[in-house]
Image 1: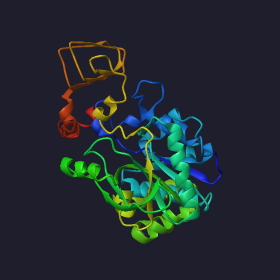
Image 2 (image 1 turned 135 degrees about the vertical axis):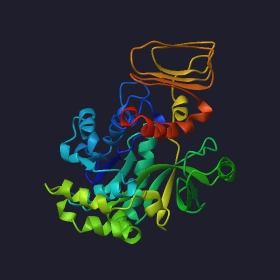
Image 3 (image 1 turned 90 degrees about the horizontal axis):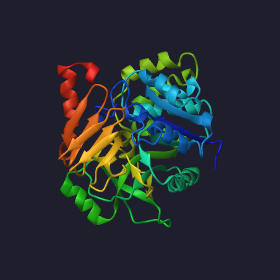
Length: 360
């Protein structure tokens, strides 16, 4: 149900370099229809949130260079709902910026923070988990994150350990956060049964997250608080540029969530993926009888278990290829073994040095 005190913050400033060459610095993955279903990832995120949040109370925080893309893909937004970061400073400054904009509108706000590029297949289950978290933030001073029931010992995700306490079986006190463990440690987490994946989706009251910034990221909090009246005014962009020049580059997980003692996790299972890599996309694509997941005009012969992505009209034909990633864009063709997909990020870094910005 839509509630006037509910606000949304969509974080849409990332580049998604592991999804290169489809995702580029000038047009990152959140603005692409990765699944070939007619909606981009940021549009799907927006569609979910407007089911419980008034449309004019959703803010998108993104890099200034993507403002036009956001407004093109979300045409019902007003320009002032797109908060433009002058450069990347990770998720803590991004959230602090949104907090101070919302504070000048509704100090009683409850906020849902969601990355723009995540996939959620079971939207009703997602909204039920969010409502449980909103109820928790209304009656306590807790910060809440959504944990995802793990299906495998994935080394690309952060993990949340919870305590088996409390009357509600679906919301637990957080004991520890662990960032991207090695395979052996990830397997031990799965075996223990008290670890869930960290989705990076947060729910809290404005008052409680502001108090947490003041306690755990006090220097950052003071930078923003010292200019609180500028947010929502004609001085906002100039102020943000000054603040970001002084802000630490730090994630909300490391800066607050790992330190705070008042963190709860909603144990969730709503068909989530952060779509961080081509491999994570593979399981969500329609596959042929040989296990090839494809998007676009693709023919595969004697080929198995490939990701083949061709968003343009060009016909792509593969023969005798297995366990590979094939991505065909207007100006780049990538062919890479699936097991080596983590190397794509380093390839992008090399290209940036050798070939310049045009290719990344």
